[in-house]
Image (tube, rainbow, N blue to C red):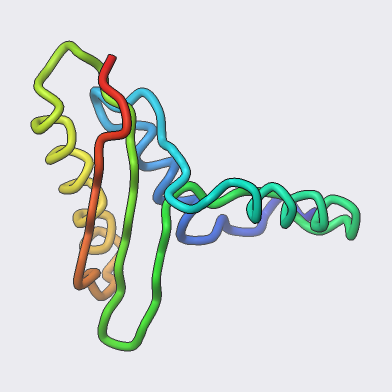
Amino acid sequence: MNDDTEDDLPTQLTRLLRNVDGVHTVYATKPLLPSIVGAVVEAVRNDPVGMHLVTVNEKPDDLTIIACIGVSADEPATVICRRAHDALRNYFTDQDLTPPATVRVQVGRVG
């Protein structure tokens, strides 16, 4: 694996969410079994291994971002969820990328 390659978009967005105040976990938005099987196959083939936690559906004119987060109980979950949503939207603005048509952030756990 080459250390100077850039992470793909789902990995970048996962890293971004992990740095949002109040977010303590980013959960997978797709079933884990296919992701685990894919990671095992990648490991056997000596390809980069990783599971995407944030879902990115790239359809023409309909980019959709879906994330599921665990939040602390120190603030209302809605406040942290909004902060995560805004961070995802701002990422595209900051990178001069076309903003997604839909950003959905769900809270999977509080506390």
